[in-house]
Length: 330
Ligand SMILES: *Cc1c(COP(=O)(O)O)cnc(C)c1O
Image (tube, rainbow, N blue to C red; front, side, top):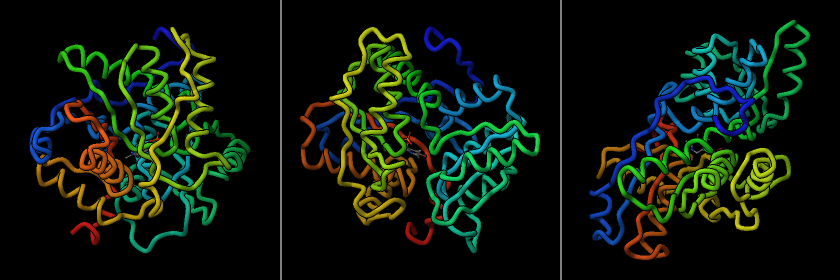
């Protein structure tokens, strides 16, 4: 690593993830656009997803600090928590997950997988955004454990380093295929991926326009998603040796698609999920990628992207949640 050389990485995933074209989908738009997909649903760690990249850096840091237990938080169908449970199983670390709400009647989807990988589950009722992380860490430390706290969504600068690196991976793939991508659509929620990509684009000289579809309308510790991304990018501007710092005034999120609320599957999102499944044999998820994909289709359908553009959908995983939403998808 040329930057942040104090960070060590613990390898967990399969990289580079595939990048390929969606010709059947493009045909549905009469080939007005070329449409590509980056398959971070194939990163590894118990069905893949974007948290693998973050966890390589987070667990690297935890292991360097001789942690024996990881604590993190999320929703009951959190992909981040499921992937953390998988990473801990592989690294031989204990894993505590703080999940919002009350114990469910049926354990399925991501929650089932986390339990299968031996995570200790704590249900935290209305405290849904990891408010109790530090309390649990103190409690475990009193019992002699060396607990390492991973924030909600794995979105601090250490986790975001996974996407700083991913921007370089994409750049190499595009140069290798002689391709230029004009717009990159993806689901943005706790901000780590977006911040990492922005910093990584500056570091690696990747020239493309990010189209971050906002997923969750609730704020995180009183901050909007845009503010969270700005804060992380400011930290990165200060801590990474970038040729040119990222201009934080240009940071934006695409808002409006989150109106139905987090985890609520709309009819349009369901239609988008079934379109990709039926035309390309690729599965999205009902919370993140289904929403972001619908956002991309909406932009293409209404020609909000210039005809002739090359667009890329960055698939961020989430497959197990389909089973939790089975009755809405069948
Ligand atoms: C966590 C997650 C995201 C959002 O990534 P952030 O870094 O939290 O913005 C997108 N898609 C899926 C499937 C996720 O699990």
